[in-house]
Image (cartoon, rainbow, N blue to C red; front, side, top):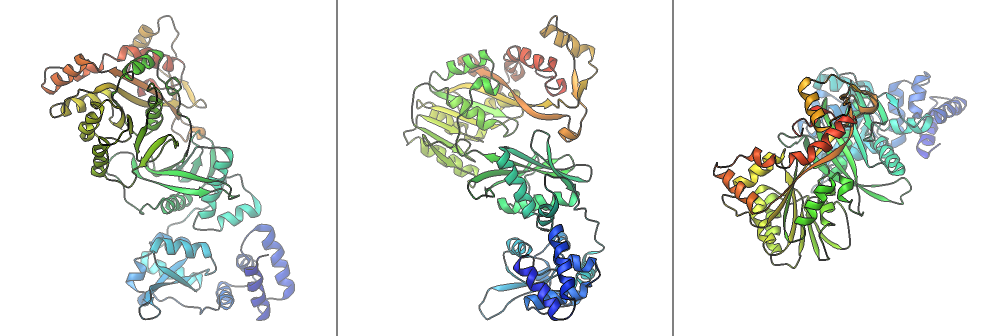
Length: 554
């Protein structure tokens, strides 16, 4: 029994509200269930809500207040969102300095003013010093209904978790979600998990390990609470997203494990999902060894083309529809550069931390500031430069480094190889492409869920195309129907396919010709398709990927 519980029980016995034997009986029940003492007292009929608020006021030496909707300060109400007020059972009363020249204090009526995590959470949300005063829960709920209308039903039940008994009750009594999120992150670190996905599915909150295993599921309200908490940890605003695209917000935060022995850096991405916002939390490795190109998905022939291109300085332009796998690809290419030399990396977030590299993290830099760093690099002695999230507008700065006998590896966003080549052709009007040695386009294709994949109908054209590429093989076309293991998506995980185009004088002339309307980009892109189509078709034949995802390759 903690000191706070003992003081509350002593106040109740001292004032004659309950007897000492009643307190002892309730304490045994409370310690066995993990619930709060006041909840057990009210449930057993030994106390009503009004008496409980009075006892808490006595315990904390605070006045019991009765909030009046007409007397509430608008500037105080504006600081706390209605759903947060309802979740925590609080009402902001007023915002005022307690002494001349002092910082303004936000006074908040709370049904349970002893909840320190709620107090700290409100201070983080508002940026104000918060002072709690106790008020009856029923009166707080009535005020919130008068201000914001009837409350929608909240579901904070739990369906799946690895906790039970008092430990679960202690975590779930924290309405801020801090304890639950801390437990999920701590368990992920302990198990060596790299990713956690937070989703809402069928009016239920689900957290899985990125491979389809559900580690937590509960009422849909938990989804809102957990995403809210992730935004706070990463310093992200409550609602501000990038227009278009799947990634709405990105940030990062440090987390210490339960034993306090290890601090782990996580990247959080708020995503546009099937049923509203989702979140992906990924562990960021502070150090590691870049993977070999064949491990990433490059074919043996593509590895030869890469090594041939990297045999001399030049620009390798890597594109992909999104961020997934880009860091692994860039660092995999970096390890293929022959010889030794100083390396500078310009990364939005450091991917592989290494003492052999000079790494500049640019999460807080704008596009023009990143371009300024690139321009300054020509005065520094770094024969190898790696740049992630580069834009076509920075192509001139990158090529200016490449023609100075440097190896430049740059990654940017383009949906397809055709779009990549089109962007290069457009830029070639103003920027000569001399120095461009290789174009690599990467596509992460979802892997079919092994739990729910099943044979599906294959059209005549598709069957003929696959049999032409894989003669004599009985091709079975499969699709994922969706199950609990994959969150209803039909896919789990992804594998990369690469299109590699070495750039020589003839390719550069074709790009210049495309800018003048004398050459068609699809014809240029089609040169690499015959080399990758067999690899793609074999993946389809093995039931690894969906043909619909990669039909343009075939």
